[in-house]
Amino acid sequence: MRKIPFPYKRISRSGRTPSPEYTARKAAALQSPSVFQKEIEGQIPGRLVYQDSLITALYPLGGGQLPAHLLVIPNRRIPTLNDAKAEDADLLGHMILTARDLARQEGIAETGYRLAFNTNEDAGQSAFHLHLHLLGGARTGPMVDQRWRNIQRRLNDPDLPNSFEKRILGTWSGKGKAFGMAANITMSWEPDLQNNFLLLNYRMDMRDTSNQLQVFEGKAYYQPAESAGQFRATWFDSGGEMHPVEASYDGQILTANWGTPTTKLGRTLYRFVDDTTIEIVDYIQAKDGNWKEFNRNTVVKNSP
Image (cartoon, rainbow, N blue to C red):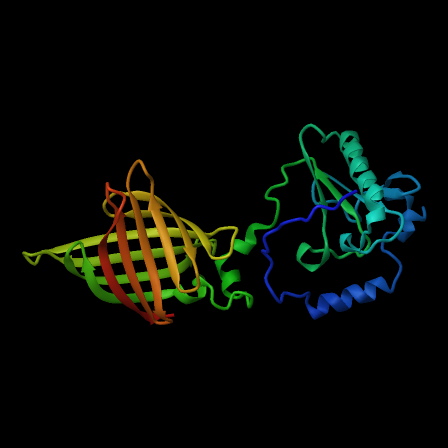
């Protein structure tokens, strides 16, 4: 068989390693018999569902995570999926097809089920003998735990030292020009809705040529997207407008593209001059496709 180079985009965080505690626990576990050894040898038959010369299937100890939850285990100990070799391909395929048959036996094949290998710390592997989870009997929810989106968790993440969330949080104020008028600006960013979103509150107090006060207010809910530095948001303002927002942060500038082609298209740049100063510039796309600036101001941080 000819090997074809596999192109991929690197998405892992450089320098990320397992914790010392997990590494020590794994090493100690591998010095002891497999936690599944007694079931494989038939010493504890109560949980056994299926067995042949290659694999064993059983119900997890203490009950499952869903109404239907089974483990499919190779009889020969392989610590993790990382340790499987090319010659184990048939074994792994046998595990998957057996799980398929067990799903039919459990009556969950048509309503749906999930197969999952957990590998090492980030996946929550605690039994160091490769095993395939068969899960079903109810809606399984997101493919992975979505709590990584949690703003407070991201603020405390040492792997994100220069994240947008860490730099932007707090209250800001300053002066500038908006819609051709002198303006006082106030802005705040804070976690909201149980830390699942960043809430932006924005206000401009402007004086027109007759010295009449004109107030513009807006707010947006930002949520981290799947890729680092990417956000989705929705903007609402006192003019009665609501816009979808797609934003990206490059370590210095948050570029927020908002609106739709059928309504209006705008762009807001939040540029960090330093950790306590931000320049904000707003643009609207004209009919000729060019971007027209309509607001520029500078704000400084008042409180973290």
